[in-house]
Image 1 (cartoon, rainbow, N blue to C red):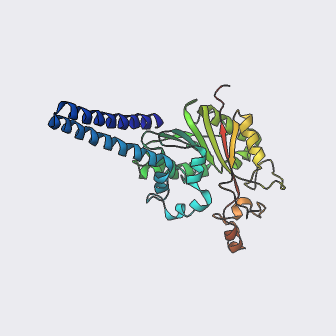
Image 2: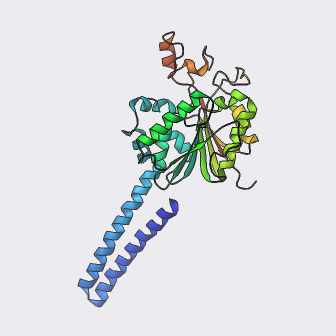
Image 3: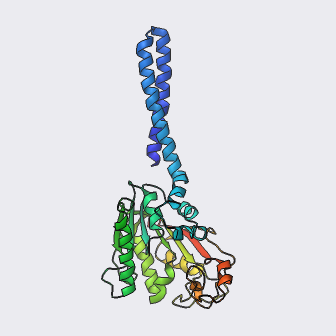
Length: 311
């Protein structure tokens, strides 16, 4: 996208320069009719190019992203979670821009997919690494089916999406090797811990293989308070930030930056039903419901890693 903007900007400058030269030639050679016609044509072209440059600038600075986030293709239920998930700020922090090739690992019901696909645009590519359709786990098969139906219901919106398989226990590639500008995953690391640390580490290795050298990995995860103990399967849904960073770095990534975009200081991270005590799950039903609604969704780490350009 950037080289195109640069080229168009130079074209605008060049067009203005030609117009100025034409005006000088008009005075010197006294050929007003011919020169006026040329100047008008170039001015019109220059204006059109300038408008295209301005449109591209708007698309890469966020106004288009906000319109996608608030778009009619998204349900009111999904949009209600924007205040907790902060998608515009999160994607900006991760450096996700139109035209990129991105892998979304474990997209679930597609909450972020419905933002990422239109944001990346027709020149971009989104690999959605979802459950194995041949999984023996019924929940996994049903989740994938629901996601596929979402894509099929709006083929124009999701024309740049390609489904792939993600399995933390296998070595199946989630995208072609070294193909992605970025890999992102949202609140999933604890799920990969069900099989223990080795499965979670394998998941990070799969992501490492997919991203190109110099590319990035963006991770959002429920953050466990430092004073609380994390069990070996992260059964509360919360994880220590250092634990996640260690996994990523052991797989080969380097931590670039961390953000408090998705932090929630109201969350003690110590609840009877773990993270699912809080909205939107509210596993305790009406018990202390108002208290948990007041807390809101979980406290979350937001981490940005890079795959070193040279290994």
